[in-house]
Amino acid sequence: MSNTLVGHLAAKFAAHEENWGTEALGYILRHSQHAREAVRDLLKQLGIVVPESILYRNQVAGEDKAQPDLVGLDDGGDQRLVIEAKFWAALTEHQPVTYLGRLPKDGGALVFVVPAARLTLVWAELLRRCADNGITMIEEARSLKDTVVARSPDGRMLAIVSWRALLEPLTLRLEASEDRAAREDVAQLRGLCDRMDAVAFLPVTSEELTTPVYRRVIEFGQIIDEVTSRLTSQGVATTKGLRSASANGYYGRYLLLRGVPVFRSATSASG
Image 1 (cartoon, one colour):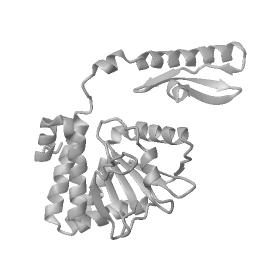
Image 2 (image 1 turned 120 degrees about the vertical axis):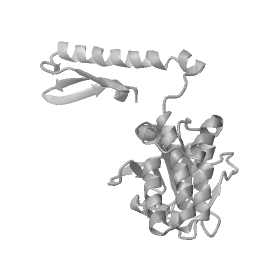
Image 3 (image 1 turned 180 degrees about the vertical axis):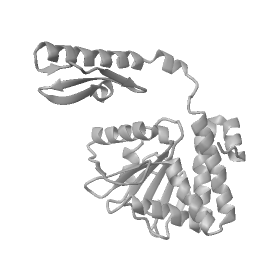
């Protein structure tokens, strides 16, 4: 794990860890052309095109009362790109719907940067919120590790990338260009990200201890068993030679449904 000054200070003043990461990323992009080029190239691989002259600004408030972490402005002052930097904080009420509403409908993008361990869960929640608000997002096939991207019919894009997927190409570009100052800045930010990955287990809060969500997890598992039992008793399905399966975050049952192999999980039932 990289142990850097920024990582140490962010841990010391833990209430502002997200702000440390956001401000650091914004600073690097504003002060290094090579860093901007690296980010532009990464986004291009995701099908997101941003102007070469894009101008990065932190915490740009709007009439919608939302305040994105980092925005990229084009020459006309329009927000072509919104970047939300996350470690372990929850999504806000504005994410992603309000931020998507800020984007032009001819290629604007909203990009979330999260720890790799959170990528799948955060992405699922982003898509759920879009669907709940009538926004269709169609996932696009991309080969980059730790990245997912989707496009709406009107051209707006939603993407999620891990900190690693973002910072590795920055580091390589800055090393090749001998941009020493920016390279050292990125090393500081990587140290912070490494620390966040190392302390991924957050202290349990009183709200978490009293939430009914854990009861729901058990209930969903019971639903899976009950549905499986009814299907087998009716002769619609069989579990002969098959078993239940579980891992961190899900529980489910394997069965043959009219001869078709099926795995029904409590996580999919709850979604």
